[in-house]
Length: 478
Ligand code: GLC
Image 1 (cartoon, rainbow, N blue to C red):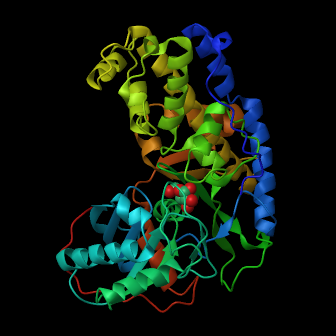
Image 2: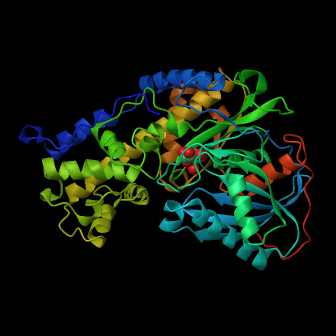
Image 3: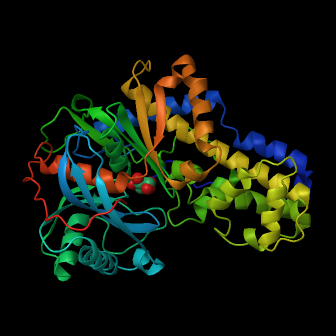
């Protein structure tokens, strides 16, 4: 997966490494910097990897054909949608009115427990099928339903309604799924639950769902992106540029799920990144994701804080419980810390006190805020570099407007993330940066999956039979 050696330097230093907090922060600023020159080097490397992936040559970018093209905005019908691959699992009923009208959405969210994401395929898909049955009973009623299935992991597809899991990531590890068609696993589990009327007509990734949800309303949308627990991007590609063999497909363009979280070139890793990687469930994998996404940012910050505490006297050398265990400092706290813009980091001090670190001093709080800032700023600049690479791949001189549909809690909740990404676009594109818009699009796995199911059912992309509209029943806006 990764071509780089697993170099795992220790983050502990000897006495000679002791610095004042200010000097340590200055050193960290250099280590975590991702200046324009590096962004440009990364974009060039990213283009190389895109080209290799599209040719079918070895590449850290899988460039997975998604067997779907953008919608017309006039799609109609009623669809079920399933969203699997984040912290929550969701089932939705989506009614597309046609003619560009507002869709009607009913949805329910179920929390997945650790056992569901770490046991066997039967336990996972059995739980999913039970939730679907419960949802149908309370929101839909009996009938025949086409379903769009969003499965947010790398899947190899040869058609729109099938796909094999290539490998797990984001901490998921369920036996019996890798190499199997996830649609078949779901269909079998639904059959065991007696859900004979539900038919999966399309399989998609959360990035493609997000792109489609935005493209349904905005024809300039040609890129989709997730910056949440994991990170990834997809875009609309011309068929003639996809040099590797793909299955039968009747259109001129197709979305490509890049699996950009696995990109591993021109990304300068610190000792903290290397340690996080070595301790992760997938060492060597998902390089870019581990420097960018919400599953990891808090942990990178925690490793820096722990080392500063041990070496440089942060928290007077007494590590608060909040930073004591792997993943104990979540990325939502990175956002919370940075939301405090007070001159003396009073809010951060307060947060520390509330979480049991009564011994924290104002300088500890200020240093923690700077560490969080360094880690999230690097993340936003790398994420922006990925998107800038995609935009310039499809439009090298940025001559047209591009809407990038973005979903994910880090992008949505972090106080300065989107601004930092746009500052990076300004550096790269100057006066043309205004042509690149990012739009928060939170309904990708629901509306997007339904739009994909509608396009797939129309026969345009897959040759599947037309959608059946179930009887009208209770509806509400999701
Ligand atoms: C991981 C998955 C990818 C997904 C992303 C965001 O990177 O491999 O498929 O899109 O997380 O959920």
